[in-house]
Length: 151
Image 1 (cartoon, rainbow, N blue to C red):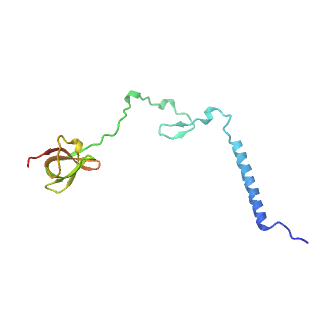
Image 2 (image 1 turned 135 degrees about the vertical axis):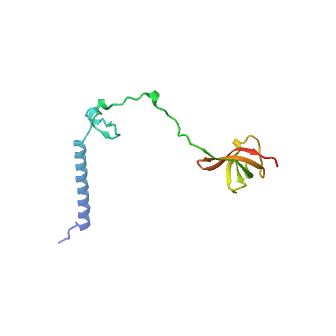
Image 3 (image 1 turned 180 degrees about the vertical axis):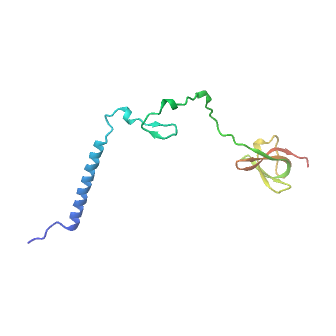
């Protein structure tokens, strides 16, 4: 007598294939029963209530708040800058004219303060003595009202 050609591995593969077919058929039947096709638009509508939650019931018209479009203001949040100290004295220790910025070293605190060359009223160069005010910007201190002092 000859041995059976069916091995354990073959049986396992066939069982897995049969299970996949069964699962696929089950999913297909589930999709058919839960199908939204052919239903009215009312069944597919979603509403947002006064708290921002999504629901399937329309909002109560008595709780409706009317807002005029003219009352809505659109703008960018204003970044507040504080002037920290006025009439500080310092020396310009670095200028990068290609990129448009430089640094001033405060004579009292030896603190380096950033400055934009586009905000200057007249040209200055390195090692010039200046007076300036500072303001706090989002990236740190920035020099404003920079004025050259006679040597």
